[in-house]
Image 1 (tube, helix red, strand yellow):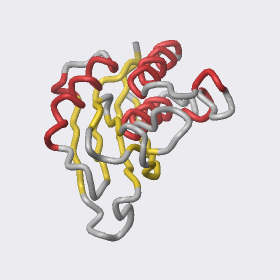
Image 2 (cartoon, helix red, strand yellow):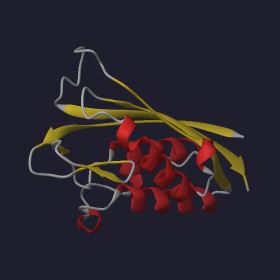
Image 3 (cartoon, rainbow, N blue to C red):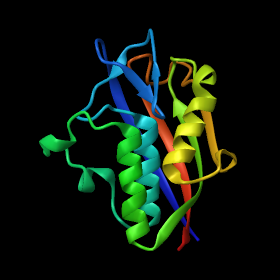
Image 4 (tube, rainbow, N blue to C red):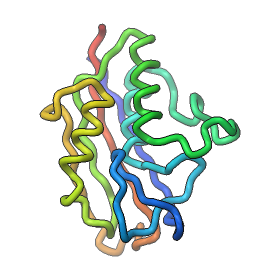
Length: 155
């Protein structure tokens, strides 16, 4: 059994869609980034890569590579699952916390959980999606962060 920890954060950018866990959340500014800036998928991907000893998403999907511009978080996460499998591991669970003043996560929680479970090849019961507000101590509505822990089993 292996354990990996991932964290990602992006600032808001008006005019871009907001995607978290592969779910588009309307009426909220999106996040700035080379990809779709889905901090949930990025944090989970980094947790998986870390647990498998494969570095981080920046090594595998660099911002300098034009072909990764706009790549969707779920697609990126699916590719990471393939990299992890190539190293002899498979995801076995994932627990994450979205850190943001807004948007509210609860209306999209089940859809996020389902999208992540599908990308990870897991039952939804092995994926936990939670949220917390920083209560004005950071990310004061100008960004979204996510912290994720993933467990991996040898294949």
